[in-house]
Amino acid sequence: MRKPKTPWLLAVSVLAIVMLLMPAVAGCSSGNSGEKQSIVFADLSWDSAMVHNRIAAFILENGYDYPASTYTPGDTIPLTAGLAKGDIDVNMEIWYDNQQEAVDGFVADGSIVKLATNFDDDWQGFLVPTYMIEDGLLPADISVENISDYWELFKDPEDPNKGAFYSCIAGWSCQVINETKFETYGLTDSFNVILPGSGAALLATMKAAYEKHEPWFGYYWAPTPALGQLDMTVVAEPAFNQATWDADKGCEYPAVSVDVYANKTWMDAQPKDAVDFLSSYTTTTAQNNDFLGYMDQNGASYQEAAIYFLKKYESTWTSWVPGDVATKVKAALPAS
Image: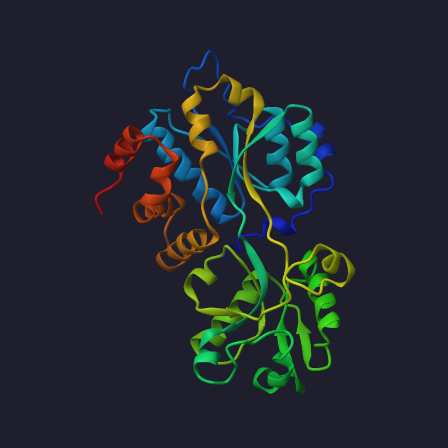
């Protein structure tokens, strides 16, 4: 799973200021009179967004006869600002809860329009390898209420009197959230919270333990390649409750709505077919985990991952388009 950066952890408070200061992004399409022109996608700096851009582009180019799409690279703040300004036409992954104030402002002033929810079952939380349950080391109902009973399985090599919990990266918002959770759940007496230096370092601890069939207890998120490859079990927390979350984080992380937005001027200038298609676009975190895992295992490109998705999840994407469009897209897919 990406690291790819975690979009929900990116700062967005200065978005409105950046929008005013940033230069125009090259490659803007100016659509007019319903003429089909190259669509400019926000090529955000994490893998799933880049794959979704290429899935959408393949369908638009081969099913609807649009010119080759354009991909403008960047991060959350400048690309959302670019969408509002009209330098970007479509953003396939706006993590709404992370930039709600800015997005609401752009919607209110008529700059951008939400077309669809790409997925809203993304996840983050605590995990253990499933083999620990299959081997009888942990109960099937492992949770924050009983995992302290098994702390010795996870002994911290630098402090054998406590178990090790591999948490979020220092500086990410989940670092503080996880520490608050551990206090709330009373886990600090049994576990040391270890902060990896990077997303890659966190992933390395999980993969190293998995490859050796050893215990591991830590934080991770989805969609990511790792959870598309490794069989992990969620350490259960109380169901999400907003009041509880606001008080002491003593519940599950809330899911974040990941939405498809378009520039309003671009949308109004387009033939209706593109807007209808993008308004029907919806996937699941499991599907995202799968194509991200495919990328990681096979060294595949974003385009190859898009083809993988289109071949494997035909029943999903064909529900987004008319039958004649689906036929054209399937005919354009490579044979092998």
